[in-house]
Amino acid sequence: MAAATSPPFCASARRTSSAATISKVSLLFQIHQTRGPARRATLTLPHGDVETPAFMPVGTQGTVKAVPQHLLEELDVRILLGNTYHLYLRPGHEAIRRMGGLHRFMSWERPILTDSGGFQVFSLSELRKVTDEGVSFRSHIDGSSHFFSPEHSMDVQIALGADIAMAFDECTEYPADFARARNSLDVTLRWAKRSREHFEKHKHERPWDDGQRSAISVQRTEQRLDGQAPSLFGIVQGGMFPELRRECAERLVEMDFPGYAIGGLSVGEPRELTREMIATTLPLLPADKPRYVMGVGYPDEIAEYARMGVDMMDCVLPTRAARHGLLFTSEGRLNIKNRQYAEDQNPPDPACPCLVCRRYSRAYLRHLMAAQEPLAAVLNTLHNLSFYLEAMRKVREEIAAG
Image (cartoon, rainbow, N blue to C red; front, top):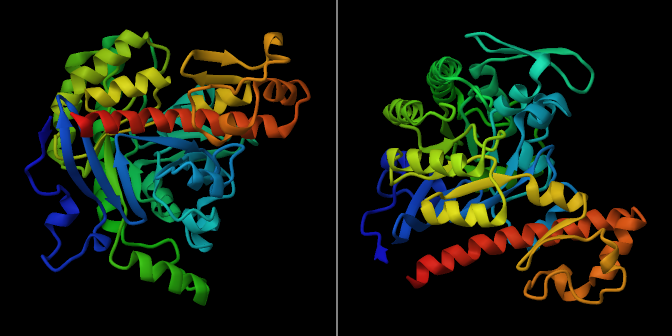
């Protein structure tokens, strides 16, 4: 184990006077300890601190499915991911802006990261058309026509008021040949430059800057957020080609983003290839800035990536699997719908300290699934999220213990 000896790292902090306090900066990344490539750090954002390595539950439409915000707080979730594409379509970023931003709208006072909408537009397949200007697409809800450019994605994310926004990128499908990945990479780099330029010009435009905020919202938000602005992360693409990943990472580092993400993974490629792309890209990213791998993976995978030096990860797996009755446990994956659990009085995972395992049996959870009770999704999701969060806590403890 080696303790970090350098000062906290933050582009925003470097521009702040020595009299500034942590609460006045947009992003501060302080490394406390390292163990090989793994590191334990604190990411300070306008809405609070995040201990890393961290897992971010996905709150696609302003909600982590089946779990209310007060229970997320009980699980000690420090940061959520919101989805720009879905919130843009419903209820609309302008409506959220008028109500004071996403934090106030969903009653969540801890940090939020919003993705750019690029992956969701990519997943529309037949409903989209990509040009150098941006992406034309049809809503999956009602078929209406829309257009996302890098500038528009920034405007939407600024309106939502997240702590971290993501540059607009094109996600490369798998499999894709070299020529296709090369073209996608070129588009992503041009869009990254446009995203950064537009974001820097407009990032101080607060969600409530329309004169319609209430006196209560003025007091609550200005006391907490005075002098702060969101931060923008760049996204490394390049398909499954190491040389393209290298080029994209080097070009993005030249743009000097406050943090960097590795995107375009978990799109159908083998796990070994996912790991190879992460291992290829991580050493190319600045060691003094947060590193985020998007959309991965199973519990053992996120623990492995954290030990490789990844600071932040997100994935829909714990919530999606829970709704289908799949639980992650220390003994492996458990399909709670199986008949063998009909009279099993054991907790879902005897080694798990979560509130579900402390109180409920496998038999009861199976009954809820068989009866199609909404509580099944709530309890299953609480357990899975707790299991993922516990995996990250254990990695942080490993690093701290050396």
